[in-house]
Image 1 (cartoon, one colour):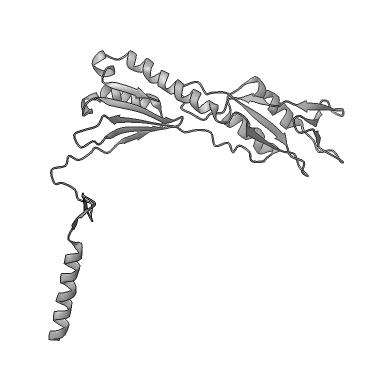
Image 2: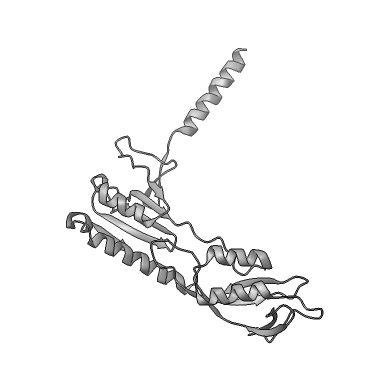
Length: 247
């Protein structure tokens, strides 16, 4: 038993020694093998999260007494904006507010059946001339016995019902200009061009493919920046002057 006790004490001491932080010097630089936190380090506030830009504006207008100093609005992308402090004495920033947009769930470059495509088009896209053309087209496409459409790589010809018994072939427009809901609702949704395709299958199916390489994201960020500039301009100078917008 005595040997067992000594062995346990030996292992306990080894564990304590392993837990102690070690300071090493390598190539003239000093390193520690553990992350250490000073007892006098100031704690950071938990950030507030919301889904609109207007909520961040409300916070800036009514809760600016909470600001630790000058602030920065950083537009990370078309769906996320941060309100953070400038660098403090520890060369760190404090994030007080985060806005993340609720956006369209439409799946680009994926096939939808006829009914689902029409529902998604109405739910996730702003009303426009080309959207109405697509709705009319998708709602009236029929499957022929031998083919549903012809395709030359750029345009497609589909069978569309134009009367009770008569049918006519129409050219599917490409590209189409549509306005999806994909950024904050307080700003104008940027329009983009999309390639519209009809699938050659037993039942009609459709998909939309983005055709602009993400140019709309830059437009959205510019619109968000303009929105905050306008909102801050209407606030008292002591509030607006302490905030920088980066986007």
